[in-house]
Image (cartoon, rainbow, N blue to C red; front, side, top):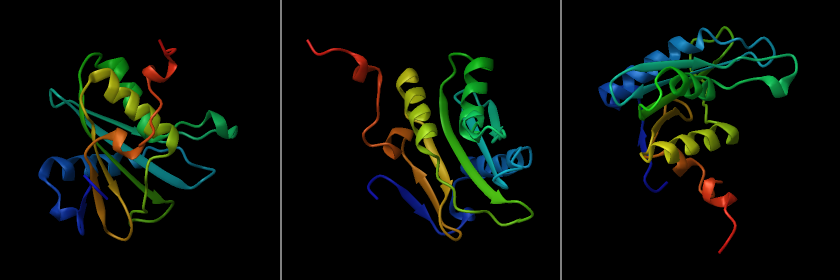
Length: 158
């Protein structure tokens, strides 16, 4: 995958990325996932070093659920307005499992992440646990969504 970096173990990641993964793991413990039993945590770091975390929050009416990534992003926007997001880590595990499960952000989260990048005019690096113990570092959130829908998509031609 062009532009993506792959790591065989967590230990191969840089210290800041490992720290974010650790914080995302902690955040996953705060997930409310009685239906899917899939606990997701996200951690992001802002340009001033502030850490923001989020976890998935489910609801019996499934469309009302909120993914960990969006919880963290919206918390950052509401609590630390105007501060750019540099990097985000996303992890997941199944109920009663200590080992992580592969987790990639859903389409809705990718769209929201891309919108944040557009707003701040800076890429957000994304770290995700892939298969087995493989980790992927993506150069930007929009690289996860190649045909992103942006503000420009809403403008009429001419």
